[in-house]
Length: 83
View (spheres, rainbow, N blue to C red):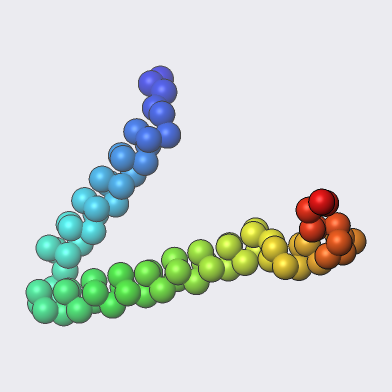
């Protein structure tokens, strides 16, 4: 059995997905205008989902620096350089 790297698997999966999409677009009974509208609407929806997921991931995984440093117990004198 052949072993594939992750990049090879992703390329194969992407090519299969795109091939399936092209085949389904050419073989369905809808007009070209309807297909283009559906494709546009679907990609816009996907784009919004990806943006929302990215914002959610960022807010969950990156700490707020002001909140994170608030409980360090440092005073202004601790932060000023000594002369």
